[in-house]
Length: 254
Image (cartoon, rainbow, N blue to C red):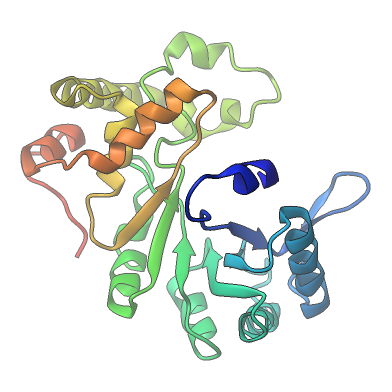
């Protein structure tokens, strides 16, 4: 990461990172929302990234007890912003009431929620709220952890390593697996019309709504990166969306 930023030719890319989760010496991860911990995480990130300021600093998760740690953490991010250590501040995996609690302290620049064709819960309340409040939405897992890439088959799912969390995920098990693989077949048909990969179509589907600012995607090699980057150029029409969703009409959250 540091080398990529330093060797980048042209304007410096934006640097986004998160806080609110700490690893102990045994590798155990805990959610920590104290001001002291977040300030230390910020200092550590600035040092490791070798930058003077973090462009977007987000909190990984809300406190598990949904308690006052939420306000303490957000007050700390607001203070870091005023101090010039971060430019914009946001959250990840927060619901609307939690966003509202944050907004009483300082504006929320961004929200990072999960969103994909098989995980659409944010359409009902969160996306409309963010659109009204001008909160940028950067969705993650738009390809559903590989399930919507077109490369995942029933045989491949059966061969997932024992320690792969997807083995116990309901979306990778019957009866949902068959339904999801049928969805992938529909993605493939639309992808063929665009000369694109099914995963790119799955990402483009998440970007179809004006409330969605961007999508976080992963790639294991340059070829995969090139394939998924095409998603930003693909503008799906109503027929495409209806075909992908398996409906007669486009379903758009409003």
